[in-house]
Length: 308
Image (cartoon, rainbow, N blue to C red):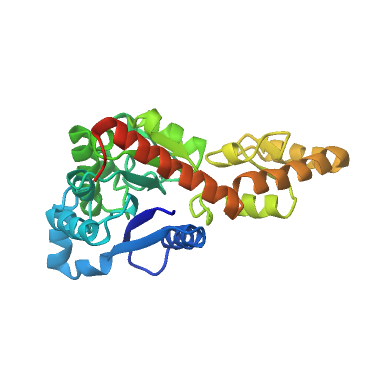
């Protein structure tokens, strides 16, 4: 017998994004395997004009209306588990209080670094910046990290600071899903509980390595800079070659080595395809996702009794 899953998602303005694709692809995958899936969505188009934007900025750390709306969905669908993909900027993290009040376990996919970085990328002015992760989130306001605007950055900084102080990510969310080991390490460095973070690649790979995964699927090893998620996806010397970021000479050397060692590249090609089949095909992805749900439900029962 399958599970009942409620997916919760706050859609962004500007069309269908990667997170939308991930939620929908996981929904199809879960339903294909006999699970009952319902979706509750909000949309940032609801914010409206100047007054709506001001109200949304004030409510961004915590929206009682967002919690109320999700609580109604929980009562309607009575899921076994809640899977949150995004809560910015209408629903807000208040939705996790609704899950706790309903005694339902929750999982959140960490599609980006918005929980610990105002612009969600750890990049500022073309370089890596981790100031807010190690210091005050309000440094991002000084740096104008979101859309080059201090005013637009302020409510995001308030949200990060509010939930860091409130320990929301320690006390309210049962499990997180990071897309790579690199993503997990960054969130742990930012104060999240390592034991609560699982690693599962997305079928759509919207924030990491789409080109790498497509190459693996085509039996192609990859030469890439040792930076970010690439260093987790590519096993140096096994499924590709990593070189120091920004080092054009090292890139040229890697390409020359690949040309001069066809037998090694053939071996890497085989390894790349094997990596794709093991981690990124739908069957493997489903097995990982359902195992995370099952673990989360078991732990919720053990910690506080039956979740419903």
